[in-house]
Length: 103
Image 1 (cartoon, rainbow, N blue to C red):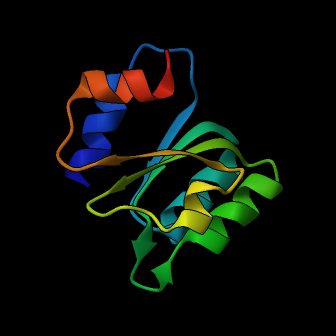
Image 2: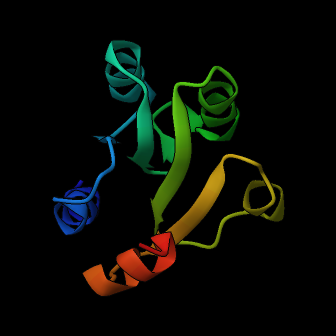
């Protein structure tokens, strides 16, 4: 949660609808309220990896880009997924986040 909040703080003031969530239940509720330009998420929650769930959110037009906050390298199939904008490895610098998003 600390790193996701740090990412959200780094993006404040940018013209993006950003949602930050700790798991699929919280993210699902937020995305049901309104679609997002960017979802900041961990790659797994208590129920396991989020990859299929994230793909469904992207396919249903609930989110445009997904950025994962992770402590490990994502599997190749995730890195090649159409919804995957990138991953930022903990700990990170806020300027690295902006660079990754190319803003």
